[in-house]
Image (cartoon, rainbow, N blue to C red; front, side):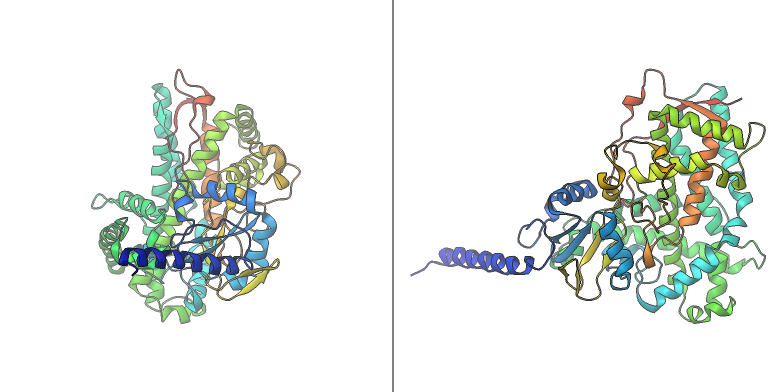
Amino acid sequence: MITSLAFSILFLILGVAFWWILDTRQRRLLPPGPRGLPIVGSLLNLGSLPHRTFHELSNKYGPIMSLRMGSVPAIVVSSPEAAQLFLKTHDSVFAVRPQMEAVTHMSYGNNGISFTNGTYWRLVRKFVVQELLAPAKVNSFRGMRREEVGLVVEEIKKAAAAGEVVNVSANLGDLIENMTFRFLLGRSKDDRFDLKGIMTEAFTLAGQFNLADFVPSLKPLDIQGLTRRYKETSKKLDAMLELIIDEHEQNLNNGNNRDIVDEMISLSRNNSSVNHQELAKLIDKASIKSIMVDIITASIDTSFTSIEWILTELMRHPSAMKKCQEELTSVVGLDRMVEETDLPKLEYLYMVVKEGLRLHPIVPLLGPHESKEDIVIKGYHIPKKSRIIVNAWAIGRDSKVWGDKALEFIPERFAESKIDLRGRDFELLPFGSGRRGCPGMQLGLLSVELVLAHLLHCFDWELPAGKSAKDLDMTEQFGLTIPRIEQLLLVPKIRT
């Protein structure tokens, strides 16, 4: 008689054998990739920096690679040619966003820009592009940006006069935060609540891999404690946004320079352009909150992180910094501040920005896509509901595109190159591409160029005593973005 233990072992062996056979049959049709383990797939092998893990695996399995992340089939895209197939050629099939628990709790589900699908998403995106982030709207806040940048420059000048070390990371974080909040809310800071702290907590949580998103059976167990933390952060965030919206509703400014919340409230009251009447019937307070979270998320960490990485690279490459400063002196001079109208003339600065975003893309893994139907690409079967992950970090390091010195910071590589970063060229995708490309790309790029231009125009920068460029830690910290693990501390010297 077979004992219960022996029967259990036999049952387990047969189950594993059945899974192996079924998995092998399915994999014959899929792109190549690691087999993974039962139930969890390759989740346990991603490490703390998944974009690097995916890059290493793609070197072995190819630019279109399949793997299982729990019960979710995933396709990792790691070359410009492959990215073009998924983001342009077959964009209509992959323009869907998967549903994720962090979004459900902290971004009000399907009410925002980033993870909404269907007709509502198209209406919201159209409104955001045509109204909230339209060039005229962005330009109307030019004076605000000049004021905020000027305040930071004056603060750094005081530190320079005193010979002090400046925490550039902290200064950049405060500057981008204030610019974003004034554009969005009409004011920079409010002592009644810690908006920056709450959003930092939300960024951290949203950047973590949640097992429950890939193994739904684990969701009720909340093994990582993320569900509890989502709910706690969401509650604090909601209370804060509720107060902000209520105050805007009571004091709605009907002038020409209304902030973004004013514009959304006006739309919800059906007082906006006839072009958005269909959306006006759908938008409510939850929608406004969700769009606010999306704009804050897409603005603060991204711009701050990009500027910090680029400035760090310039500290490691003083010849590139010198060229930037010489260009600024030639175009602007030293008797006035940089204006936004100067930026198109700063060609070398733009090359520096492109090179910085190539090596340190804003988001290393572009926002996830999901296939809405079965499709065959390059002879590979891509099942419906597959998670599509475009590794922008790996594409920026593709030696077939960037040559033997792909890992080096060389802005001059763009002097003879027509490759741009606005999503038309798939060799460089810091803002994504296609239907799901970043709608705030122009504002984000403007913020990066403007702040960087002022920092280089007004100051020479040195490392603290006893430090050299080789001491700069380039270790990444994974999240929605990949900031440096260490803050950037520098000594400013006023340029004269």
